[in-house]
Image (tube, rainbow, N blue to C red):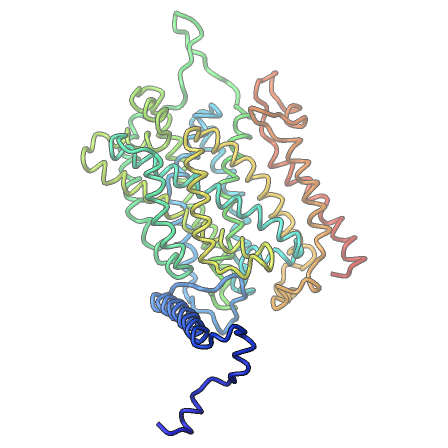
Length: 532
């Protein structure tokens, strides 16, 4: 090598500069430290590049809440919309919610069926409507709501969405762990089952959009077949209602009126389960073409949820009624809730029953994956600081959080499930009313009235006055109408029948009504003075 080449390869720093930087004059040691630090940084940089290349190779999603531009759309199958919703709902929690009707609210078979049908048919509608926002906007749900809730209001909803995702993830893994306990004859603690399911969830959630669609597309099929076995084996044990005797002569009491209190409360629980999907409905359509058929997306989403949720909740109700005459089923439900009941129903199948139960336990993965994936997106939507953290890190943090929550809540599952669903129904109703009234009243149900390129521009978005004000009024309505073991609101007490100990839970309906009435008024004021 020539002197010219050697001089060209030397760092552009003089000895005088080095002496100023290193006043002790230990130039040799300083160069050594500098080279060591530089090689360490290069090593970390190379590792990061290799990791990112690996993610690219397996088509793992690295995108956060940034808008997916029309030129970046890669999903061409609208049919996937229907399949992914079926996959998300052929799960144990839907079976468990169905059992709550007769188990907690003391409804008979027909009352439970009617409540499930009406409540879910209505509650699925918002999810189907919001899913249509994905293709035109290329935005995630918690970013889309900035156009109705404003930047700061959307941050509040994103925080509540994060809490909702963690709660549902905990519910899902608890039900899966309960079934695993039955598989291993109660020899493993719930904690082990929870951790095992969480490990699988984190792998798929980490990979992102494409892998979630692949998993949901096929995972529900063997689980559906397993539920067919449950239906066949339980058909002879289904009862209309539980026999209640008035005296020692065993004169049976028959209720001649509808249990309206129980139906309203159970309806709120069913509504919470179905409406909770609305906070992530658009997340799974953002890669569809901008001109994707809106009617197909709506119908595929609606019926994907309809045929996933309702038949399974029917089955949960029907199988639970078998506990009225079958003591083994009753004991199994008392010990391990829905998981124990499924195990008792399949007990006659021997070793094959364990195979089916393993399928049931891992069906919890199918609904936990979208929750924790959307948790990561909702967390990024809270503020610019949170947005700088890569989505994949939130998957890890969220998994640790819901796993801890599940371990704590597992011992009082039914109480936790009912209370959690009631709170979620109130939150979901307030969020949905504001979003839909903004879209249908003030945006005239046209996506042309949105500037989706301004999703991160606070000056172009509403100031959040109308949405937050209406939301506060909605929360007041929820508190006035709610009914729990520990609190009954005054509006709920007004509708209590014959001095019943438990009044109907009207929190969801009051929150929805109060918000629906006040938001248009506040929004008109906001538009008049702020012009956006």
